[in-house]
Image 1 (cartoon, rainbow, N blue to C red):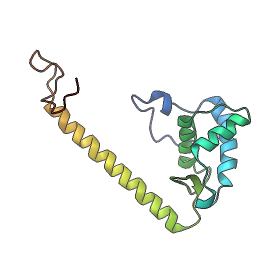
Image 2: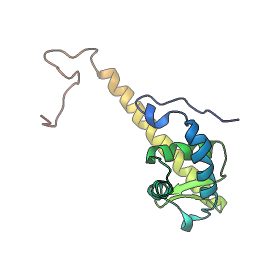
Image 3: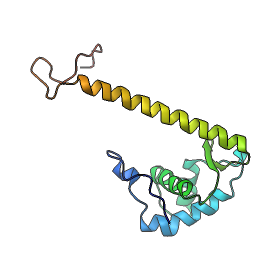
Image 4: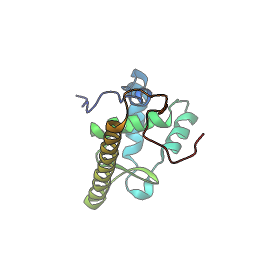
Length: 146
């Protein structure tokens, strides 16, 4: 059974839409087989390389859809312990690698939460509609952007 942690994300519908039939039947099995063989940080494979290799073999996939498929693989544990670094995706070989990656994920979650809370606070300060004296609806802008 496929886990569904969220629906499409607003303003990112194209990137977060469900996997297509082509992605599920053709690309997913190829990526699972490929990623399962990339064990250890030294064997990391980048998104760009995956796209290039898939293209060389006649498969069409974008970097955003690679990320979506990898998200599906991780959530459904199709390749266990699949993590990433600046060098690319790979299968963690130690508990310490997994713990560090999970810590990184928590930090990113916290940063996103802090940004959301700050934007919600800013939203409270916005006027419902722009006015003649305040054409952009914002309190003020210290930057001469126009």
